[in-house]
Length: 367
Image 1 (cartoon, rainbow, N blue to C red):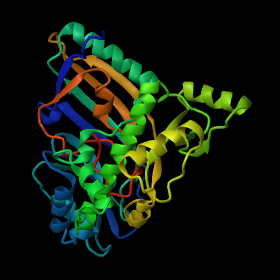
Image 2 (cartoon, one colour):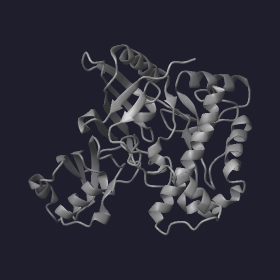
Image 3 (cartoon, rainbow, N blue to C red):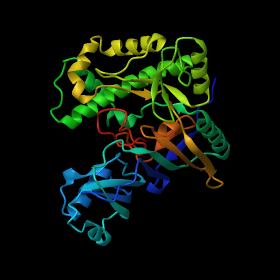
């Protein structure tokens, strides 16, 4: 019988959870959208965007960001604000003082910053309360995660404050209850259901020991380019795909269900159809909700880059830093090595790796 994982505390202070957004591109230097790079503490992204816009005399509805960042952390990110070029917004920024916000720079661009417009996030997280022996065990497990990746599950942040958003979405899709009127809430509910079903498919692959492998018929994602291709049923090409998966170059994908989602073949297709049928026997119901999410594919494996683990003192604490692609949850990585106790005691806000590529709902960044 395996020993239980050690228990570690996170987020005992904002300094214990640091997130740095990695942008997908640099602003062009021209245009009506001012890209403001900032560091914030104790503030959430929408509130900071609103305050910035109002301080510049701009409409808060014209703001944008690649991913929301948690208030219970120190986070660096870029927010775009639509400000006419004729207005001297840069000079106003230089004189601006917002509590908990440090302006790091600003540049113009032609388009609004939208969810998913980032490469990923760099995390620096302090784990506290570990005995020295436990700290060594945790460090070894995290180093292994840096080599082979971890199951790419969605964390509890995805499912709402009480964890009931998937159930609410199902009752709505089945016609058992009326859905919310607010479009954003509709997207959040549908996204929660997609995420729950993805986790169920992933759980079955983990149980079978195939989450990090590719099976004949899988739709695999190339980690370098993002391209998706069908894994052959047999032959040398199948052997090549298996070798690339073992090397960490590709990973099998799972379903973010929707009316236009691309389906795999063979055993992977059977698993996904069975999971969907358990909650939504009439899959054609997805067509009625196409506007909330047409469906996409998400890697079953989360690859972890630049893993570095350092002891912080003789008490057994660790500082862990690593990079995740957008859509990845930092707590998913940590949970492979230890049981997490979050000092902020909530699972409704998200806090790092963005999910803008994973669903049609506006994402929160991932814990």
